[in-house]
Structures are given as structure tokens and as C-alpha cells.
Image 1 (cartoon, rainbow, N blue to C red):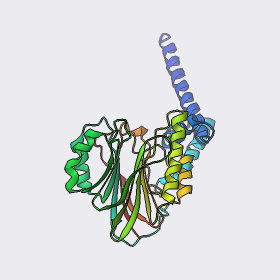
Image 2 (cartoon, helix red, strand yellow):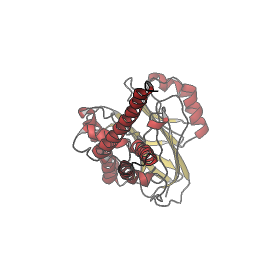
Image 3 (cartoon, rainbow, N blue to C red):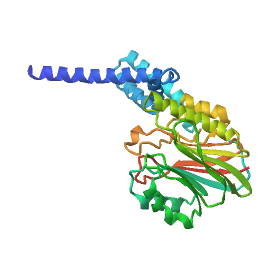
Image 4 (tube, rainbow, N blue to C red):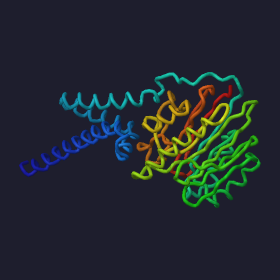
Length: 322
């Protein structure tokens, strides 16, 4: 019996240390997530609010079970802070998008991942979904060629292929008016723009893919491209749509600034937590693939599509034009 006591004590100590580390990091990142304007690394911690919420709830339950009420109360406060940030996106708040009266329009955003070679899965997904238009990202020459069989479904194409994960493509069932590749900011990452007439309404559609913010310079370039995208869209007439792997979540400060610059609305607001990256493991998913629309467009549905072999999951949006 005495030989087992040190082992039991060691296991209890390790369990207590693990709980303490989870609590400490959850508290730290919960706080730094509000300080992204001051340092790019703090900005990175703003994206994982759902994970912090889950961690805080686990800590609260464990400490409540052990009747450690102070620690349990502390964890509940952490959970409440993160829940308050997530609340508008969890389906508990009615979406504020205004009503539209025109025909339903379907749009798709998909970062295919350059290294992904599941071409058939992507083609099948697009044929089954049959969107009016789609923005496809990380398109290289091979992907461009492999998507050519979809020409019967999408006869109108604007593409800028790249070998560096920043190729981009706009495909449409409807004619593209004034299609052009645009360069927003200093990152030298192409964006695609066109006006698309659907059911008597002409939509200004921009697809863009800023750099991931993995460092001070990349963060600066991402933020610059988001601001430039906003200014560019402000110069376009009529209802506007922005589709892209923006490498930021809806509760990030730079994302919120984009909404303020453009007056666009987040299609995910009030529609639940829709993590799109990484496709696996699911518990790490965060929503960085975005569809923003003018307030006069009414969103009927927004959902995350199936796994097509990419590290991103597709975003599917159905809305009505005014």
C-alpha cells in the first residue's frame, strides 16, 4: 500500500498542474485576444474564442465537481467573457441583414489548397451545389486545367493562376461585366473583381485572399489588404459582395474595421459557429473563410460544405437580391 501512495500523489499533482496550465493559458489568451492592435502575436490569440470557451467550461465543471468553488467561479467568468464575444454568431441573435425581394442567388467560396489533388471531389461538390458564382482560391496551373471540365456549368471565368498558394479564380454561370484582376496593398497577392447580373440585379463581386498573419510583416500586409479591399469596394456601384479566405475571424478587430469601412454585413452573424479551417481536427476549426454582403441583400442560408480534400471547408451562401 505504501508503495502506491507516491504514484497516486504524483498523478494527483500532475492532474492539478495540468488544470492550472489550462486555466492560466485560457485566462492569458482570453485577455490578449483583446489587445491585437498592440502586437501581431496578441492579434493571433483573438481567433480561438470557441476553444477558450470550451476550455473554461471544462475547468469550471472539474473544479465544481471537486467543490473548489473559487476556481470554478474564476473559470465561469472566463467562459462568460468568451461567450459574450461569440454570442452574436451563435444563432441566439436574429441576423440584421435587410430583406430582399429578388430571386435567390447562390455563392460559394472554396480555398482548394494548392497541394490538394482531390480534383474530382471539388468538381463533384460544385456540380452538386450549382452556385451562380464561386470564388476559388490557391489555384495553380494544374487546378486551372483540372477545373476546365466545369466549363459547361460555369462558362464565364476570370483566373490568375499562381504557384505560391495565392492563385485565385472567379467562375460564374452568368456573364462577367468588366472582369479584372486587381492588386490590393503591397502583398502582390491578386484579387478578382467583376460585376455579375443575376435576376435583374447587378452585383459587384470581389474575391480576395490576404496573407496569413504569421509574423509582424505578414500581419501588416494582411491588414493593409483588408483595408484596401474595403476602399476598393466603396468605389463600386450597387450591391456588393466580398468573398475570401481573409485569414481573420469575425471577432477580430481588423475584421470589424473592414465592416466599418464598407458598411457590409457578415453573413455568418446569428447563424451559429461555422468553423472552416482547419478541416481537421474539427475542435481547432475557426471561421476565417468569409462572405460579406451589402445590407440590402437578405441571407437565407449560410452553411459549411463537405470535406473536399483541402484544409479548408467550403462556404455556401444563399441570398436574395433587392
